[in-house]
Image (cartoon, rainbow, N blue to C red; front, side, top):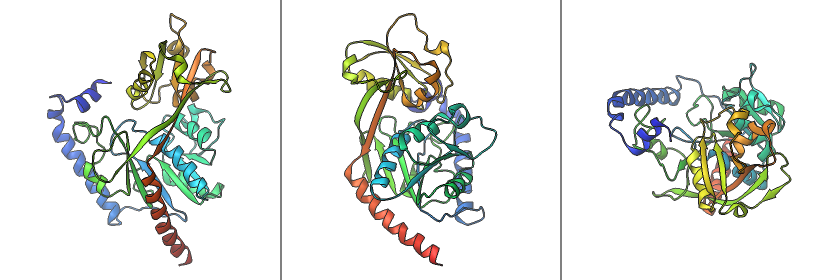
Length: 335
């Protein structure tokens, strides 16, 4: 956990002097949202329903696993989904970028490539999410769009808002940036359609998302797989350049693995030196890290693949919301 995260999540007097800045940030967030609600700032509308999966706090909460589940759910329900995202960390000079399983994560970002590989649907990345949506609609036959993050990107119109909450860290000290981890106040949750907790819910109206499956595959040869239980009692080097590395390390430890933890900054670009250790113990990484480490692959490097799904009530709620917005979009098209 970084120093700033310790201030946010473990409590520290250093956050107190930062409170005036947090209050100013909260005011600016409120004003900006009101400008969009009042129509003074433009919000784009789309010909198909759009679902935003985001959070109100900084750092990883588990959005990407939920987006992967949601894509599969929508496809099973008869939709043709597509995904847009910012492409954070990508250094492409031209946006939007159509992302494929072979795209360079250096160009389009690690999460974009991961989603293309796991979702098997059209994926477009661009800092301007409105441009990403427009490109997706122009170049594919998607009839529903998911935005991985972008809850605060109000220029991008949306029909359904889903917030993912970290069940362990929750909202830290409850303060807005920079004194706390919040991008928007906790009261923002009252306006969204679904609150999914990556862990155990603590409030009415929250739905639980849990781990349903995890296994290891070899970074050098993905066809080689094994159960994580096969490493029980062994010592491994675990690397994680994600929003909340500690969750990854805890999962390995819970499986009986002795972990030597190597946390990196979110979206870290790996070099050979990052993966070189003085012993011959296995190296385990997240799927998000794996897309950037393929060129560094070694026979003793393993990737932890996870699958998560929410409780059944989420599907029922989604069915209701989707039917409602199908009617809205049909009326909009006819008019």
